[in-house]
Image (cartoon, rainbow, N blue to C red; front, top):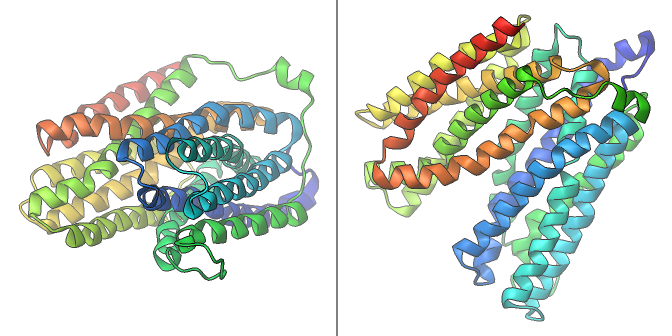
Amino acid sequence: MTPNSKEAEESNPKILSGLMLIILFVSMGQSVYWQTMPIIGREFNFSEIEINTLVSISAAMFIVFTPFWGRLSDRIGRKAVLLIGLSGYVLSNLIFLYSASLGLIGYVTGFSLLMILLMARIVNSAIGAASRPASGAYVADVTSEEDRSSGMGKFGAANNIGTILGPVLVGSLVGLNIFGINIPQFGLLTPLIVMSILMAIAAVFVYIFLPSGDSVSEAETNGSGIVFDRNLKLLLAIGVIIFTAFALVQSITAFYIQDRFAYNLDETAKTTALLLGTMAFMAIISQLTIVQKYKGSPLNLIKFSLPLFILSCLFIIFSPNFLFLYAGMAFMGLGMGLASPGYTSAASLNADKDKQGAAVGLAMVAPGIGFALGPLLSGFLYSSSMNLPFIFILPLFLLIIVFIRKLEQIN
Protein backbone atom coordinates (compact mmCIF):
# COMPACT_ATOMS: atom_id res chain seq x y z
CA MET A 1 0.00 0.00 0.00
CA THR A 2 2.82 2.39 0.72
CA PRO A 3 5.10 3.81 -1.93
CA ASN A 4 8.17 1.62 -2.24
CA SER A 5 11.92 2.37 -2.41
CA LYS A 6 14.22 5.03 -1.03
CA GLU A 7 12.57 7.59 -3.25
CA ALA A 8 9.32 6.98 -1.37
CA GLU A 9 11.07 7.49 1.96
CA GLU A 10 12.38 10.85 0.81
CA SER A 11 8.96 11.91 -0.42
CA ASN A 12 7.08 10.90 2.74
CA PRO A 13 7.29 14.34 4.40
CA LYS A 14 5.88 15.92 1.23
CA ILE A 15 3.15 13.29 1.05
CA LEU A 16 2.31 13.91 4.72
CA SER A 17 2.11 17.68 4.13
CA GLY A 18 -0.24 17.12 1.19
CA LEU A 19 -2.39 14.81 3.27
CA MET A 20 -2.68 17.43 6.01
CA LEU A 21 -4.15 19.86 3.47
CA ILE A 22 -6.64 17.22 2.29
CA ILE A 23 -7.65 16.38 5.86
CA LEU A 24 -8.13 20.08 6.59
CA PHE A 25 -10.54 20.38 3.64
CA VAL A 26 -12.43 17.22 4.66
CA SER A 27 -12.87 18.54 8.20
CA MET A 28 -13.94 21.94 6.88
CA GLY A 29 -16.54 20.25 4.69
CA GLN A 30 -18.24 18.59 7.65
CA SER A 31 -17.95 21.70 9.80
CA VAL A 32 -19.52 23.88 7.11
CA TYR A 33 -22.44 21.48 6.88
CA TRP A 34 -23.04 21.46 10.66
CA GLN A 35 -23.00 25.27 10.70
CA THR A 36 -25.26 25.88 7.68
CA MET A 37 -27.88 23.16 8.19
CA PRO A 38 -29.72 24.92 11.06
CA ILE A 39 -29.78 28.16 9.06
CA ILE A 40 -31.08 26.45 5.91
CA GLY A 41 -33.56 24.37 7.94
CA ARG A 42 -35.05 27.45 9.57
CA GLU A 43 -35.46 29.07 6.13
CA PHE A 44 -37.55 26.04 5.08
CA ASN A 45 -39.53 26.19 8.35
CA PHE A 46 -38.28 22.80 9.51
CA SER A 47 -38.62 22.11 13.21
CA GLU A 48 -35.58 21.60 15.44
CA ILE A 49 -36.43 17.90 15.61
CA GLU A 50 -36.47 17.64 11.80
CA ILE A 51 -33.17 19.52 11.50
CA ASN A 52 -31.54 17.38 14.18
CA THR A 53 -32.85 14.26 12.43
CA LEU A 54 -30.98 15.27 9.27
CA VAL A 55 -27.81 15.76 11.29
CA SER A 56 -28.20 12.54 13.30
CA ILE A 57 -28.87 10.33 10.28
CA SER A 58 -25.84 11.85 8.55
CA ALA A 59 -23.72 10.94 11.58
CA ALA A 60 -25.18 7.43 11.60
CA MET A 61 -24.25 6.92 7.94
CA PHE A 62 -20.70 7.97 8.76
CA ILE A 63 -20.49 5.35 11.52
CA VAL A 64 -21.90 2.62 9.28
CA PHE A 65 -19.77 3.24 6.18
CA THR A 66 -16.40 4.31 7.62
CA PRO A 67 -15.21 0.73 8.39
CA PHE A 68 -16.26 -0.38 4.90
CA TRP A 69 -14.22 2.34 3.18
CA GLY A 70 -11.26 1.61 5.44
CA ARG A 71 -11.25 -2.06 4.43
CA LEU A 72 -11.73 -1.17 0.77
CA SER A 73 -8.69 1.11 0.88
CA ASP A 74 -6.63 -1.91 1.94
CA ARG A 75 -7.70 -3.69 -1.24
CA ILE A 76 -7.82 -1.05 -3.98
CA GLY A 77 -5.48 1.59 -2.53
CA ARG A 78 -5.71 4.75 -0.43
CA LYS A 79 -5.65 7.10 -3.41
CA ALA A 80 -8.62 5.44 -5.12
CA VAL A 81 -10.79 5.53 -1.99
CA LEU A 82 -9.71 9.08 -1.16
CA LEU A 83 -10.75 10.17 -4.66
CA ILE A 84 -14.10 8.42 -4.21
CA GLY A 85 -14.66 10.29 -0.95
CA LEU A 86 -13.72 13.72 -2.26
CA SER A 87 -15.53 13.45 -5.59
CA GLY A 88 -18.51 11.83 -3.86
CA TYR A 89 -18.72 14.80 -1.50
CA VAL A 90 -18.76 17.22 -4.44
CA LEU A 91 -21.37 15.33 -6.48
CA SER A 92 -23.70 14.66 -3.56
CA ASN A 93 -23.34 18.26 -2.42
CA LEU A 94 -24.44 19.38 -5.88
CA ILE A 95 -27.55 17.22 -5.48
CA PHE A 96 -28.19 18.79 -2.07
CA LEU A 97 -27.68 22.32 -3.47
CA TYR A 98 -30.03 21.66 -6.40
CA SER A 99 -32.68 20.25 -4.06
CA ALA A 100 -32.29 23.20 -1.68
CA SER A 101 -32.60 25.59 -4.64
CA LEU A 102 -35.93 23.97 -5.55
CA GLY A 103 -37.00 24.59 -1.96
CA LEU A 104 -35.96 28.25 -2.10
CA ILE A 105 -37.95 28.72 -5.31
CA GLY A 106 -40.92 26.98 -3.76
CA TYR A 107 -41.18 24.07 -6.23
CA VAL A 108 -40.80 21.56 -3.42
CA THR A 109 -41.82 22.23 0.18
CA GLY A 110 -42.62 20.57 3.49
CA PHE A 111 -42.13 16.84 4.02
CA SER A 112 -41.21 16.17 0.37
CA LEU A 113 -38.36 18.69 0.54
CA LEU A 114 -37.20 17.25 3.86
CA MET A 115 -37.03 13.73 2.37
CA ILE A 116 -35.13 14.92 -0.72
CA LEU A 117 -32.58 16.78 1.42
CA LEU A 118 -32.32 13.77 3.74
CA MET A 119 -31.53 11.43 0.84
CA ALA A 120 -28.90 13.88 -0.45
CA ARG A 121 -27.30 14.01 2.99
CA ILE A 122 -27.34 10.20 3.31
CA VAL A 123 -25.49 9.90 -0.01
CA ASN A 124 -23.08 12.65 1.05
CA SER A 125 -22.23 11.00 4.38
CA ALA A 126 -22.09 7.47 2.99
CA ILE A 127 -19.67 8.34 0.17
CA GLY A 128 -17.89 11.25 1.86
CA ALA A 129 -17.06 8.92 4.77
CA ALA A 130 -14.42 7.37 2.51
CA SER A 131 -12.07 10.35 2.90
CA ARG A 132 -11.24 10.02 6.60
CA PRO A 133 -10.20 6.36 6.87
CA ALA A 134 -8.31 6.54 3.57
CA SER A 135 -6.38 9.65 4.59
CA GLY A 136 -5.80 8.34 8.13
CA ALA A 137 -4.49 5.02 6.79
CA TYR A 138 -2.34 6.93 4.30
CA VAL A 139 -0.75 8.77 7.25
CA ALA A 140 -0.04 5.38 8.87
CA ASP A 141 1.49 4.17 5.61
CA VAL A 142 3.98 7.03 5.33
CA THR A 143 5.08 7.07 8.97
CA SER A 144 7.23 4.60 10.87
CA GLU A 145 5.94 2.95 14.04
CA GLU A 146 8.16 5.29 16.07
CA ASP A 147 6.71 8.36 14.35
CA ARG A 148 3.11 7.11 14.21
CA SER A 149 1.93 9.27 17.12
CA SER A 150 3.61 12.30 15.54
CA GLY A 151 1.88 11.63 12.22
CA MET A 152 -1.49 11.13 13.88
CA GLY A 153 -0.88 14.33 15.84
CA LYS A 154 -0.54 16.22 12.58
CA PHE A 155 -3.64 14.42 11.34
CA GLY A 156 -5.55 15.61 14.41
CA ALA A 157 -4.19 19.14 14.15
CA ALA A 158 -5.28 19.42 10.52
CA ASN A 159 -8.69 18.12 11.51
CA ASN A 160 -9.01 20.69 14.30
CA ILE A 161 -7.86 23.55 12.09
CA GLY A 162 -10.50 22.58 9.55
CA THR A 163 -13.12 22.50 12.30
CA ILE A 164 -12.16 26.07 13.22
CA LEU A 165 -11.99 27.35 9.64
CA GLY A 166 -15.40 25.88 8.74
CA PRO A 167 -17.40 28.32 10.93
CA VAL A 168 -15.14 31.16 9.76
CA LEU A 169 -16.01 30.38 6.14
CA VAL A 170 -19.72 30.16 6.98
CA GLY A 171 -19.68 33.40 8.98
CA SER A 172 -17.90 35.20 6.14
CA LEU A 173 -20.01 33.96 3.23
CA VAL A 174 -23.46 32.89 4.43
CA GLY A 175 -26.13 35.16 2.97
CA LEU A 176 -23.83 36.56 0.26
CA ASN A 177 -25.04 35.76 -3.26
CA ILE A 178 -21.57 36.10 -4.80
CA PHE A 179 -22.50 33.90 -7.77
CA GLY A 180 -25.31 36.19 -8.91
CA ILE A 181 -27.97 33.44 -8.99
CA ASN A 182 -31.45 34.96 -9.22
CA ILE A 183 -33.05 32.85 -6.50
CA PRO A 184 -34.37 34.31 -3.21
CA GLN A 185 -32.03 33.66 -0.25
CA PHE A 186 -29.60 31.75 -2.50
CA GLY A 187 -26.77 33.31 -0.49
CA LEU A 188 -27.55 30.82 2.30
CA LEU A 189 -26.04 28.13 0.08
CA THR A 190 -22.86 30.06 -0.75
CA PRO A 191 -20.65 28.37 1.92
CA LEU A 192 -21.62 24.92 0.61
CA ILE A 193 -20.86 25.95 -2.98
CA VAL A 194 -17.43 27.33 -2.03
CA MET A 195 -16.71 24.17 -0.02
CA SER A 196 -17.63 22.03 -3.03
CA ILE A 197 -15.16 23.99 -5.16
CA LEU A 198 -12.42 23.49 -2.55
CA MET A 199 -13.16 19.76 -2.40
CA ALA A 200 -12.98 19.54 -6.20
CA ILE A 201 -9.56 21.23 -6.08
CA ALA A 202 -8.50 18.77 -3.38
CA ALA A 203 -9.58 15.84 -5.57
CA VAL A 204 -7.50 17.18 -8.48
CA PHE A 205 -4.53 17.60 -6.11
CA VAL A 206 -4.85 13.99 -4.92
CA TYR A 207 -5.13 12.68 -8.49
CA ILE A 208 -2.06 14.56 -9.73
CA PHE A 209 0.33 14.65 -6.79
CA LEU A 210 -0.29 11.75 -4.39
CA PRO A 211 1.25 8.38 -5.36
CA SER A 212 -1.07 5.44 -5.77
CA GLY A 213 0.96 2.95 -3.74
CA ASP A 214 0.51 -0.80 -3.90
CA SER A 215 -2.90 -2.32 -3.28
CA VAL A 216 -3.31 -5.59 -1.46
CA SER A 217 -5.01 -8.51 -3.17
CA GLU A 218 -8.39 -9.60 -1.87
CA ALA A 219 -6.95 -12.97 -0.98
CA GLU A 220 -4.26 -11.38 1.15
CA THR A 221 -6.80 -9.09 2.77
CA ASN A 222 -9.17 -11.90 3.64
CA GLY A 223 -6.30 -14.08 4.83
CA SER A 224 -5.10 -11.71 7.55
CA GLY A 225 -8.03 -9.51 8.41
CA ILE A 226 -8.56 -7.39 11.50
CA VAL A 227 -9.19 -9.63 14.49
CA PHE A 228 -11.85 -8.20 16.79
CA ASP A 229 -9.92 -9.37 19.85
CA ARG A 230 -9.78 -8.11 23.42
CA ASN A 231 -7.14 -5.53 22.49
CA LEU A 232 -9.36 -3.94 19.88
CA LYS A 233 -12.45 -4.05 22.10
CA LEU A 234 -10.58 -2.25 24.89
CA LEU A 235 -9.19 0.35 22.45
CA LEU A 236 -12.65 1.03 21.01
CA ALA A 237 -14.09 1.34 24.52
CA ILE A 238 -11.39 3.89 25.39
CA GLY A 239 -12.11 5.83 22.20
CA VAL A 240 -15.87 5.87 22.78
CA ILE A 241 -15.39 7.20 26.34
CA ILE A 242 -12.96 9.93 25.24
CA PHE A 243 -15.09 11.20 22.37
CA THR A 244 -18.37 10.88 24.27
CA ALA A 245 -16.99 13.02 27.10
CA PHE A 246 -15.61 15.58 24.65
CA ALA A 247 -18.87 15.76 22.65
CA LEU A 248 -20.87 16.04 25.87
CA VAL A 249 -18.86 19.09 26.96
CA GLN A 250 -19.12 20.71 23.53
CA SER A 251 -22.88 20.21 23.33
CA ILE A 252 -23.68 21.92 26.64
CA THR A 253 -21.16 24.76 26.57
CA ALA A 254 -23.62 27.35 25.21
CA PHE A 255 -26.35 26.36 27.69
CA TYR A 256 -23.89 26.31 30.59
CA ILE A 257 -22.45 29.79 30.09
CA GLN A 258 -25.86 31.32 29.39
CA ASP A 259 -27.39 29.84 32.55
CA ARG A 260 -24.30 30.30 34.71
CA PHE A 261 -23.59 33.94 33.84
CA ALA A 262 -27.07 35.08 32.69
CA TYR A 263 -25.81 36.13 29.25
CA ASN A 264 -28.12 37.22 26.45
CA LEU A 265 -28.11 35.36 23.13
CA ASP A 266 -25.48 37.58 21.52
CA GLU A 267 -23.13 37.32 24.52
CA THR A 268 -23.73 33.57 24.66
CA ALA A 269 -22.87 33.11 20.97
CA LYS A 270 -19.66 35.14 21.21
CA THR A 271 -18.52 33.50 24.44
CA THR A 272 -19.28 30.01 23.16
CA ALA A 273 -17.22 30.69 20.04
CA LEU A 274 -14.37 31.95 22.24
CA LEU A 275 -14.42 28.91 24.54
CA LEU A 276 -14.75 26.27 21.81
CA GLY A 277 -12.20 28.09 19.65
CA THR A 278 -9.74 28.14 22.55
CA MET A 279 -10.36 24.46 23.22
CA ALA A 280 -9.62 23.59 19.58
CA PHE A 281 -6.59 25.91 19.53
CA MET A 282 -5.09 24.26 22.63
CA ALA A 283 -5.63 20.84 21.06
CA ILE A 284 -3.71 22.02 17.98
CA ILE A 285 -0.90 23.37 20.18
CA SER A 286 -0.44 20.05 22.00
CA GLN A 287 -0.63 18.08 18.73
CA LEU A 288 1.98 20.22 16.99
CA THR A 289 4.38 20.42 19.95
CA ILE A 290 4.20 17.68 22.59
CA VAL A 291 2.93 14.94 20.27
CA GLN A 292 5.49 15.76 17.56
CA LYS A 293 8.40 15.25 19.96
CA TYR A 294 6.97 12.16 21.66
CA LYS A 295 8.37 8.78 20.56
CA GLY A 296 6.97 6.37 23.16
CA SER A 297 3.86 4.21 23.43
CA PRO A 298 0.70 5.96 22.22
CA LEU A 299 -1.16 4.62 25.25
CA ASN A 300 1.01 6.91 27.38
CA LEU A 301 -0.37 9.90 25.48
CA ILE A 302 -3.84 8.87 26.66
CA LYS A 303 -2.49 8.48 30.21
CA PHE A 304 -0.97 11.99 30.07
CA SER A 305 -4.33 13.38 28.94
CA LEU A 306 -6.36 12.02 31.85
CA PRO A 307 -5.09 14.44 34.56
CA LEU A 308 -5.83 17.30 32.15
CA PHE A 309 -9.39 16.05 31.58
CA ILE A 310 -10.00 15.63 35.31
CA LEU A 311 -8.48 19.02 36.11
CA SER A 312 -10.67 20.53 33.40
CA CYS A 313 -13.88 19.18 34.93
CA LEU A 314 -12.88 20.28 38.45
CA PHE A 315 -12.05 23.80 37.23
CA ILE A 316 -15.44 24.05 35.49
CA ILE A 317 -17.49 22.58 38.36
CA PHE A 318 -15.88 24.75 41.04
CA SER A 319 -15.17 27.83 38.90
CA PRO A 320 -15.86 31.01 40.91
CA ASN A 321 -15.68 33.16 37.78
CA PHE A 322 -15.36 33.06 34.00
CA LEU A 323 -11.54 32.94 34.09
CA PHE A 324 -11.59 29.54 35.82
CA LEU A 325 -14.17 28.27 33.33
CA TYR A 326 -11.95 29.48 30.50
CA ALA A 327 -8.95 27.67 32.02
CA GLY A 328 -11.01 24.50 32.39
CA MET A 329 -11.92 24.53 28.70
CA ALA A 330 -8.28 25.15 27.77
CA PHE A 331 -7.23 22.08 29.81
CA MET A 332 -9.92 20.07 28.01
CA GLY A 333 -8.41 21.09 24.66
CA LEU A 334 -4.89 20.16 25.77
CA GLY A 335 -6.11 16.77 26.97
CA MET A 336 -7.98 16.09 23.74
CA GLY A 337 -4.91 17.07 21.74
CA LEU A 338 -2.99 14.26 23.44
CA ALA A 339 -5.74 11.64 23.68
CA SER A 340 -6.98 11.72 20.09
CA PRO A 341 -3.66 10.93 18.31
CA GLY A 342 -2.77 8.53 21.12
CA TYR A 343 -5.97 6.56 20.53
CA THR A 344 -5.69 6.57 16.71
CA SER A 345 -2.00 5.59 16.84
CA ALA A 346 -2.70 2.73 19.26
CA ALA A 347 -5.42 1.41 16.95
CA SER A 348 -3.09 1.71 13.95
CA LEU A 349 -0.21 -0.10 15.67
CA ASN A 350 -2.60 -2.85 16.75
CA ALA A 351 -2.95 -3.93 13.09
CA ASP A 352 -0.61 -5.26 10.43
CA LYS A 353 0.78 -2.77 7.91
CA ASP A 354 -1.48 -4.17 5.17
CA LYS A 355 -4.58 -3.63 7.31
CA GLN A 356 -4.18 0.04 8.20
CA GLY A 357 -7.34 1.04 6.33
CA ALA A 358 -9.45 -1.44 8.27
CA ALA A 359 -7.76 -0.42 11.54
CA VAL A 360 -8.25 3.32 11.06
CA GLY A 361 -11.77 2.76 9.73
CA LEU A 362 -12.75 0.86 12.86
CA ALA A 363 -10.99 3.40 15.08
CA MET A 364 -13.06 6.20 13.56
CA VAL A 365 -16.27 4.49 14.62
CA ALA A 366 -15.52 5.65 18.18
CA PRO A 367 -15.74 9.40 17.38
CA GLY A 368 -18.99 8.75 15.51
CA ILE A 369 -20.51 6.92 18.46
CA GLY A 370 -19.14 9.52 20.88
CA PHE A 371 -20.60 12.46 19.00
CA ALA A 372 -23.95 10.65 18.83
CA LEU A 373 -24.03 9.64 22.51
CA GLY A 374 -22.57 12.84 23.97
CA PRO A 375 -25.33 15.28 22.97
CA LEU A 376 -28.01 12.70 23.83
CA LEU A 377 -26.65 12.14 27.34
CA SER A 378 -25.97 15.82 27.93
CA GLY A 379 -29.63 16.76 27.50
CA PHE A 380 -30.81 14.36 30.20
CA LEU A 381 -27.96 15.18 32.59
CA TYR A 382 -28.09 18.95 32.16
CA SER A 383 -31.84 19.04 32.75
CA SER A 384 -31.17 17.70 36.26
CA SER A 385 -28.20 19.91 37.11
CA MET A 386 -25.89 22.14 35.08
CA ASN A 387 -22.82 20.55 36.69
CA LEU A 388 -24.03 16.95 36.43
CA PRO A 389 -22.55 16.34 32.92
CA PHE A 390 -19.06 17.26 34.20
CA ILE A 391 -19.52 15.15 37.34
CA PHE A 392 -20.78 12.25 35.21
CA ILE A 393 -17.66 12.06 33.03
CA LEU A 394 -15.15 12.15 35.90
CA PRO A 395 -15.47 8.41 36.75
CA LEU A 396 -15.36 7.62 33.00
CA PHE A 397 -11.79 8.96 32.86
CA LEU A 398 -10.90 6.68 35.79
CA LEU A 399 -12.42 3.77 33.86
CA ILE A 400 -9.99 4.53 31.01
CA ILE A 401 -7.09 3.93 33.42
CA VAL A 402 -8.48 0.46 34.16
CA PHE A 403 -8.78 -0.31 30.43
CA ILE A 404 -5.24 0.90 29.72
CA ARG A 405 -3.83 -1.30 32.48
CA LYS A 406 -5.66 -4.30 31.04
CA LEU A 407 -4.19 -3.52 27.62
CA GLU A 408 -0.69 -3.30 29.06
CA GLN A 409 -1.15 -6.63 30.85
CA ILE A 410 -2.25 -8.29 27.60
CA ASN A 411 0.71 -6.90 25.70
